[in-house]
Amino acid sequence: MSYLLYLIILSGYIFSRGFFATGSVSVLLCATLLYILYFLRNGAFRKEFISREQLLVVLCLFSIVVYGGLYQGNSWLVYLSYFLLMLNFILGLLLIGKSTFIPAKRIVIFMLAIALSVRLFMIWSSPDPYIDVYDYLKNGALAFVSGQNPYTVNYARYYQNVIPDYYSYLPGMVYLTLPIVLIFHDPRYTFILAEFLAAYFIFKMTEKSKSSYIYPLLFLANPISPYMIEQSYTEPLILCLLLLFGWLSLKPKNILSAAVFGLVLSTKQYALFLLPLFLKLIGNFRKTIPMIIGVFTTIILIVAPFFFWNPSDFWHDAISLQLTFGPRYEGLTFFSLLYRFGFGYSVYLSLLIICLFLIFIYRRKVNNLAAFFSLSSFVFFALFFFNKWAFMNYYYLISQLFLAGAVLRENEI
Image (tube, rainbow, N blue to C red; front, side, top):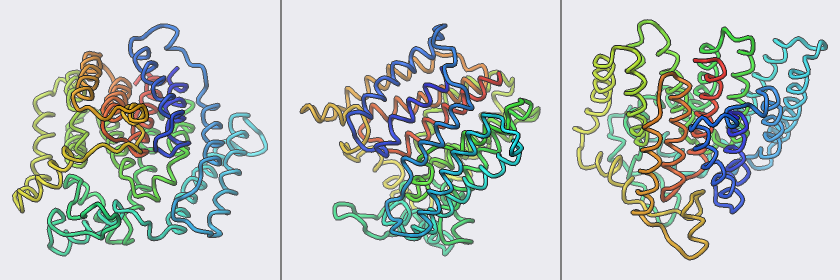
C-alpha cells in the first residue's frame, strides 16, 4: 500500500497548505498508524491498492485544485498556469490510457515541459515574495560573497515580533544557493533545479524498469511544489541531495556518496537524525570506516570555517535558536490539536513520543535503499508531527522521501 499511504500523507497537508486544520491532523493521525503497520510488514498492508499510473492522474488533478501562490497577484501567468495544469491532467489520462494518438515519449516530454513552465511562471508572477526565508537565502549568500559572515549580518524585518539577526541554516546552504543567487539574484531557481535533478536521479536508479519514464513525473507532480518554490522553502534541495546519495550508493566505488551525505548533514540540522539509518545502510557496503571518515571530513570542511569565523553567532543562529523557539500552534502538529482542547505543548511528552518512535524506527532493518528512504520519511514524520511546530515544507520532504522508498521498493533497489 505504498502509493496509497503516500497519497494519504499528501492529503494530510496539501489542502491546508501545511497549516493547522482538524481534518488534516486527523488524516496524519491515521497516517501514523499506517506507517507503523507498513513497517511491521503485515501482509495485507504490503499490497498496492493504487497503481503508479493512477497515482499520477490523481496528483495532476490535485495540482489544479491547490494551485496558487500567496504573492502572485492578478497576473496572466496565473491563468496560463491553470491552463497548463488542466492540459497536464489530460496528458496524464492519455499516458495511462496508452493512447496511440500521441506517443508516450512525447507525452512525457510535454508533461516535463509543463512541470518546468508552471514553476518558472510561479517565480515570474511572484518576483518578490514577502517572506523572511527568501531574504535570508538571498542576502545570506550575497553577504558571504562580499566577505561578510551570514551569521552576523542583519536581515530585513518582515514580522513585528521577530528580530531578523540570524541565518538559521547550516553553512552548506550558503554554498548550495550561492551560484544561482549570483546568476539570477533569486535563490528559488535553486529549488527548481533541485526538483528536476531529484527526478533525474530517481530515473537513473530505476532506468532498467519498463516504467522508469513515469517515476520522474510522479516526483514532479507533487501538487504543492509550485507553492513551495514561491515560498523559497529549501526541502527540495535536501531531497535532491539524498537521492544523489542514493544513486551514488549503487555504484561500485561509492565513497563519493559519503561526501554527499556529509553535505546533507552540513545543510539542515534535522538531517542528523538520519545518521543511524545511514550507519545501518553502509554496513552492507563493507566500507564502513572510509564512509564515516568521508562524512565527517565533509562536515568539518564545510562547517568549521563558519564556526571559527564567529563561534558565538554561529552557535546562536544555527543551534541555540532552533532549541529555544516556542511552539507554533498554527502549524500542523499533534500539539496544535491538543491546544484546541486546552492543552499546551509539553517538551517531556514530545520527547517521550518521539523517542519511542525513533527506537521503533532504528530497530528496523536497512538492507537496501528502499528501506533507507521509507524509514527516513518516518523519522521526519515522528520528529515534526509530534514536535512544537511543523509546516508544509517538512511534510513535502516526508512525502517525497516516502515516494522514493515506494518507487525503489517496487524495483527491489
